[in-house]
Length: 311
Image (cartoon, rainbow, N blue to C red; front, side, top):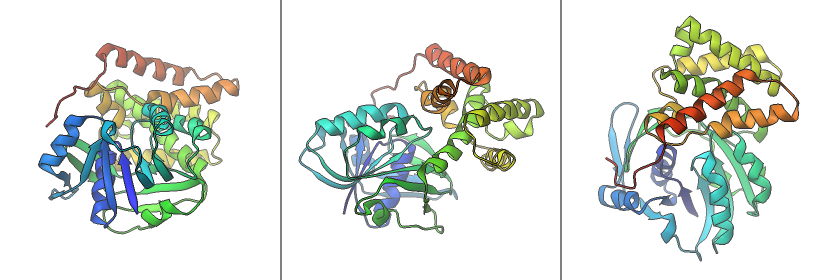
Protein backbone atom coordinates (compact mmCIF):
# COMPACT_ATOMS: atom_id res chain seq x y z
CA UNK A 1 0.00 0.00 0.00
CA UNK A 2 1.41 3.40 -1.03
CA UNK A 3 0.95 6.15 1.56
CA UNK A 4 1.79 9.80 0.87
CA UNK A 5 2.03 12.31 3.71
CA UNK A 6 1.48 15.77 2.25
CA UNK A 7 2.87 18.44 4.55
CA UNK A 8 6.16 18.30 6.44
CA UNK A 9 5.58 20.36 9.56
CA UNK A 10 5.56 18.81 13.02
CA UNK A 11 2.51 16.60 12.41
CA UNK A 12 3.58 15.51 8.93
CA UNK A 13 7.03 14.50 10.14
CA UNK A 14 5.58 12.72 13.20
CA UNK A 15 3.07 10.76 11.11
CA UNK A 16 5.56 9.84 8.37
CA UNK A 17 8.19 8.69 10.89
CA UNK A 18 5.78 6.38 12.69
CA UNK A 19 4.17 4.94 9.57
CA UNK A 20 7.60 4.03 8.23
CA UNK A 21 8.47 2.36 11.54
CA UNK A 22 5.26 0.34 11.23
CA UNK A 23 6.38 -0.90 7.82
CA UNK A 24 4.21 1.22 5.51
CA UNK A 25 5.65 2.38 2.19
CA UNK A 26 5.51 6.11 2.86
CA UNK A 27 6.48 9.17 0.86
CA UNK A 28 6.81 12.52 2.64
CA UNK A 29 5.97 15.51 0.45
CA UNK A 30 7.36 18.91 1.38
CA UNK A 31 6.46 22.39 0.19
CA UNK A 32 10.09 23.44 -0.28
CA UNK A 33 12.85 21.77 -2.28
CA UNK A 34 15.31 22.92 0.40
CA UNK A 35 13.55 20.95 3.11
CA UNK A 36 13.35 17.84 0.92
CA UNK A 37 17.10 18.07 0.32
CA UNK A 38 17.76 18.53 4.07
CA UNK A 39 15.80 15.39 4.93
CA UNK A 40 17.60 13.42 2.21
CA UNK A 41 20.95 14.49 3.63
CA UNK A 42 20.20 14.27 7.36
CA UNK A 43 17.46 11.56 7.49
CA UNK A 44 14.24 12.19 9.40
CA UNK A 45 14.82 12.60 13.15
CA UNK A 46 12.33 12.17 15.99
CA UNK A 47 13.08 13.13 19.58
CA UNK A 48 10.86 11.02 21.82
CA UNK A 49 9.12 12.40 24.87
CA UNK A 50 11.75 10.64 27.02
CA UNK A 51 14.58 12.46 25.20
CA UNK A 52 15.79 9.58 23.01
CA UNK A 53 16.70 10.73 19.49
CA UNK A 54 15.87 8.32 16.66
CA UNK A 55 16.41 8.73 12.94
CA UNK A 56 15.05 6.90 9.94
CA UNK A 57 15.37 6.95 6.15
CA UNK A 58 12.34 8.40 4.42
CA UNK A 59 11.51 8.83 0.77
CA UNK A 60 10.90 12.54 0.30
CA UNK A 61 9.95 14.83 -2.57
CA UNK A 62 8.78 18.38 -2.90
CA UNK A 63 5.25 18.85 -4.21
CA UNK A 64 6.58 20.39 -7.41
CA UNK A 65 8.41 17.15 -8.30
CA UNK A 66 5.59 14.73 -7.43
CA UNK A 67 4.84 12.60 -10.49
CA UNK A 68 1.33 13.13 -11.81
CA UNK A 69 0.93 9.53 -12.94
CA UNK A 70 1.49 8.07 -9.47
CA UNK A 71 -1.11 5.85 -7.81
CA UNK A 72 -1.66 6.64 -4.13
CA UNK A 73 -3.63 4.33 -1.85
CA UNK A 74 -3.84 6.83 1.01
CA UNK A 75 -3.05 10.53 0.96
CA UNK A 76 -2.66 12.04 4.45
CA UNK A 77 -2.95 15.83 4.30
CA UNK A 78 -1.22 17.54 7.24
CA UNK A 79 -0.82 21.06 5.86
CA UNK A 80 -2.23 24.07 7.71
CA UNK A 81 -5.99 24.52 7.41
CA UNK A 82 -5.66 27.62 5.22
CA UNK A 83 -3.64 25.60 2.69
CA UNK A 84 -6.23 22.84 2.23
CA UNK A 85 -8.20 24.53 -0.56
CA UNK A 86 -5.01 25.08 -2.54
CA UNK A 87 -4.07 21.42 -2.03
CA UNK A 88 -7.49 20.18 -3.20
CA UNK A 89 -7.28 22.30 -6.34
CA UNK A 90 -3.74 21.09 -7.04
CA UNK A 91 -4.81 17.47 -6.65
CA UNK A 92 -7.77 17.97 -8.97
CA UNK A 93 -5.52 19.57 -11.57
CA UNK A 94 -2.97 16.74 -11.37
CA UNK A 95 -3.14 13.25 -12.85
CA UNK A 96 -2.67 11.59 -9.47
CA UNK A 97 -4.80 8.51 -8.87
CA UNK A 98 -5.84 8.64 -5.20
CA UNK A 99 -8.00 5.98 -3.55
CA UNK A 100 -8.45 7.62 -0.15
CA UNK A 101 -7.61 10.82 1.71
CA UNK A 102 -7.33 11.69 5.40
CA UNK A 103 -7.33 15.33 6.52
CA UNK A 104 -5.56 16.19 9.80
CA UNK A 105 -6.14 19.89 10.49
CA UNK A 106 -7.06 22.18 13.36
CA UNK A 107 -10.45 23.86 13.28
CA UNK A 108 -13.29 22.97 10.95
CA UNK A 109 -13.05 25.36 8.02
CA UNK A 110 -11.63 22.57 5.87
CA UNK A 111 -14.90 20.62 6.27
CA UNK A 112 -16.62 23.34 4.23
CA UNK A 113 -14.47 22.18 1.30
CA UNK A 114 -15.40 18.48 1.49
CA UNK A 115 -18.09 18.74 -1.24
CA UNK A 116 -15.29 19.67 -3.69
CA UNK A 117 -13.52 16.32 -3.21
CA UNK A 118 -14.07 13.54 -5.75
CA UNK A 119 -11.73 10.99 -4.12
CA UNK A 120 -13.75 7.79 -3.36
CA UNK A 121 -12.86 7.58 0.35
CA UNK A 122 -12.61 10.64 2.60
CA UNK A 123 -11.78 10.78 6.31
CA UNK A 124 -10.99 13.53 8.81
CA UNK A 125 -9.07 13.36 12.06
CA UNK A 126 -7.73 15.29 15.01
CA UNK A 127 -4.23 15.02 16.46
CA UNK A 128 -3.88 14.89 20.23
CA UNK A 129 -0.19 13.98 20.16
CA UNK A 130 2.15 16.77 21.19
CA UNK A 131 4.63 17.60 18.45
CA UNK A 132 7.12 20.42 18.01
CA UNK A 133 9.11 21.05 14.85
CA UNK A 134 12.76 21.61 15.79
CA UNK A 135 14.16 22.14 12.30
CA UNK A 136 13.61 20.99 8.72
CA UNK A 137 14.39 17.36 9.53
CA UNK A 138 13.62 16.98 13.25
CA UNK A 139 10.36 16.73 15.20
CA UNK A 140 10.07 16.50 18.98
CA UNK A 141 7.25 14.17 20.08
CA UNK A 142 6.49 16.14 23.25
CA UNK A 143 3.51 14.10 24.41
CA UNK A 144 1.87 10.79 23.55
CA UNK A 145 -1.81 11.20 22.75
CA UNK A 146 -4.13 9.92 20.05
CA UNK A 147 -4.98 10.47 16.43
CA UNK A 148 -8.77 10.25 16.40
CA UNK A 149 -10.28 9.82 12.97
CA UNK A 150 -13.58 9.05 11.29
CA UNK A 151 -14.96 8.45 7.81
CA UNK A 152 -16.86 11.18 6.02
CA UNK A 153 -17.22 8.89 3.02
CA UNK A 154 -16.26 5.24 3.31
CA UNK A 155 -15.23 3.07 0.37
CA UNK A 156 -12.55 0.34 0.57
CA UNK A 157 -11.46 1.09 4.16
CA UNK A 158 -7.99 2.17 3.06
CA UNK A 159 -7.61 4.53 6.03
CA UNK A 160 -8.53 1.77 8.44
CA UNK A 161 -5.94 -0.47 6.80
CA UNK A 162 -3.16 2.00 7.65
CA UNK A 163 -4.33 3.52 10.93
CA UNK A 164 -5.18 0.29 12.73
CA UNK A 165 -6.59 1.18 16.13
CA UNK A 166 -3.93 1.11 18.82
CA UNK A 167 -4.12 2.60 22.32
CA UNK A 168 -0.68 1.38 23.33
CA UNK A 169 2.83 2.38 22.32
CA UNK A 170 3.93 5.87 21.32
CA UNK A 171 1.81 6.31 18.16
CA UNK A 172 -1.80 5.76 19.15
CA UNK A 173 -4.88 5.97 16.94
CA UNK A 174 -8.59 5.57 17.52
CA UNK A 175 -11.55 5.29 15.16
CA UNK A 176 -14.64 7.38 15.97
CA UNK A 177 -18.12 6.57 14.62
CA UNK A 178 -19.16 10.19 13.96
CA UNK A 179 -16.81 12.74 12.47
CA UNK A 180 -18.62 15.99 13.26
CA UNK A 181 -18.81 15.69 17.08
CA UNK A 182 -15.18 14.55 17.10
CA UNK A 183 -14.09 17.69 15.26
CA UNK A 184 -16.37 19.91 17.33
CA UNK A 185 -14.82 18.78 20.61
CA UNK A 186 -11.32 19.59 19.30
CA UNK A 187 -12.59 22.88 17.87
CA UNK A 188 -13.88 24.01 21.26
CA UNK A 189 -10.52 23.22 22.89
CA UNK A 190 -8.57 25.01 20.16
CA UNK A 191 -10.87 28.04 20.17
CA UNK A 192 -10.60 28.37 23.95
CA UNK A 193 -6.87 27.84 24.37
CA UNK A 194 -5.08 28.92 21.19
CA UNK A 195 -6.19 32.56 20.75
CA UNK A 196 -5.79 33.48 24.43
CA UNK A 197 -2.34 31.92 24.75
CA UNK A 198 -1.26 33.54 21.48
CA UNK A 199 -2.60 36.94 22.48
CA UNK A 200 -0.99 36.97 25.92
CA UNK A 201 2.15 35.01 25.02
CA UNK A 202 1.58 32.39 27.73
CA UNK A 203 1.79 28.61 28.01
CA UNK A 204 -1.41 26.56 28.06
CA UNK A 205 -1.32 25.84 31.78
CA UNK A 206 -1.47 29.50 32.77
CA UNK A 207 -5.08 29.62 31.60
CA UNK A 208 -6.08 27.50 34.60
CA UNK A 209 -3.32 28.51 37.02
CA UNK A 210 -3.97 32.26 36.78
CA UNK A 211 -7.44 33.20 38.07
CA UNK A 212 -7.71 36.23 35.77
CA UNK A 213 -6.85 34.24 32.65
CA UNK A 214 -9.18 31.47 33.83
CA UNK A 215 -12.06 33.94 34.02
CA UNK A 216 -11.36 34.99 30.43
CA UNK A 217 -11.15 31.33 29.40
CA UNK A 218 -14.60 30.73 30.89
CA UNK A 219 -16.08 33.73 29.07
CA UNK A 220 -14.70 32.49 25.76
CA UNK A 221 -16.02 29.00 26.48
CA UNK A 222 -19.52 30.23 27.35
CA UNK A 223 -19.75 32.19 24.11
CA UNK A 224 -18.59 29.20 22.06
CA UNK A 225 -21.27 27.05 23.69
CA UNK A 226 -23.90 29.43 22.29
CA UNK A 227 -22.62 28.67 18.81
CA UNK A 228 -22.01 24.90 19.19
CA UNK A 229 -24.32 23.04 21.53
CA UNK A 230 -22.58 19.83 22.56
CA UNK A 231 -25.21 18.91 25.13
CA UNK A 232 -23.21 18.83 28.35
CA UNK A 233 -21.50 22.18 28.92
CA UNK A 234 -20.28 21.25 32.40
CA UNK A 235 -18.51 18.15 31.19
CA UNK A 236 -17.05 20.04 28.22
CA UNK A 237 -15.72 22.80 30.50
CA UNK A 238 -13.93 20.20 32.63
CA UNK A 239 -12.48 18.71 29.45
CA UNK A 240 -11.11 22.09 28.30
CA UNK A 241 -9.53 22.72 31.72
CA UNK A 242 -8.06 19.21 31.83
CA UNK A 243 -6.47 19.67 28.40
CA UNK A 244 -5.06 23.02 29.49
CA UNK A 245 -3.53 21.39 32.57
CA UNK A 246 -2.32 18.27 30.75
CA UNK A 247 -0.55 20.39 28.13
CA UNK A 248 0.40 23.02 30.69
CA UNK A 249 4.04 23.35 29.64
CA UNK A 250 3.18 23.54 25.93
CA UNK A 251 3.00 26.62 23.77
CA UNK A 252 -0.08 26.45 21.53
CA UNK A 253 0.36 26.10 17.79
CA UNK A 254 -1.13 29.57 17.33
CA UNK A 255 1.39 31.13 19.72
CA UNK A 256 4.19 29.22 18.00
CA UNK A 257 3.01 30.45 14.60
CA UNK A 258 3.07 34.08 15.73
CA UNK A 259 6.45 33.71 17.40
CA UNK A 260 7.85 32.23 14.19
CA UNK A 261 6.17 34.86 11.99
CA UNK A 262 3.83 32.42 10.31
CA UNK A 263 0.18 32.79 9.43
CA UNK A 264 -2.11 31.29 12.09
CA UNK A 265 -5.18 29.05 11.78
CA UNK A 266 -7.48 31.66 13.34
CA UNK A 267 -9.77 31.60 10.28
CA UNK A 268 -10.31 27.85 10.53
CA UNK A 269 -10.93 27.99 14.28
CA UNK A 270 -12.55 31.25 15.40
CA UNK A 271 -13.46 32.36 11.86
CA UNK A 272 -15.45 29.16 11.42
CA UNK A 273 -17.31 29.82 14.68
CA UNK A 274 -18.09 33.38 13.60
CA UNK A 275 -19.59 32.14 10.33
CA UNK A 276 -21.71 29.67 12.30
CA UNK A 277 -22.79 32.45 14.67
CA UNK A 278 -23.75 34.71 11.78
CA UNK A 279 -26.00 31.99 10.32
CA UNK A 280 -27.71 31.66 13.70
CA UNK A 281 -27.85 35.48 14.09
CA UNK A 282 -25.91 35.27 17.36
CA UNK A 283 -23.96 38.14 18.87
CA UNK A 284 -20.45 36.94 19.81
CA UNK A 285 -18.35 40.01 20.76
CA UNK A 286 -15.61 38.04 22.56
CA UNK A 287 -14.99 35.79 19.55
CA UNK A 288 -14.95 38.85 17.28
CA UNK A 289 -12.37 40.46 19.58
CA UNK A 290 -10.15 37.36 19.58
CA UNK A 291 -10.38 37.03 15.81
CA UNK A 292 -9.50 40.66 15.11
CA UNK A 293 -6.74 40.69 17.76
CA UNK A 294 -4.98 37.67 16.23
CA UNK A 295 -5.42 39.01 12.70
CA UNK A 296 -3.87 42.25 13.94
CA UNK A 297 -0.92 40.29 15.35
CA UNK A 298 -0.51 38.53 12.01
CA UNK A 299 -0.39 41.86 10.19
CA UNK A 300 2.01 43.29 12.77
CA UNK A 301 4.52 40.50 12.23
CA UNK A 302 4.08 40.44 8.42
CA UNK A 303 4.15 36.68 8.39
CA UNK A 304 6.12 34.51 6.04
CA UNK A 305 8.53 31.59 6.07
CA UNK A 306 12.11 31.89 4.86
CA UNK A 307 12.87 29.67 1.90
CA UNK A 308 16.02 28.13 3.38
CA UNK A 309 17.12 24.95 5.10
CA UNK A 310 16.16 25.70 8.70
CA UNK A 311 18.21 24.07 11.44
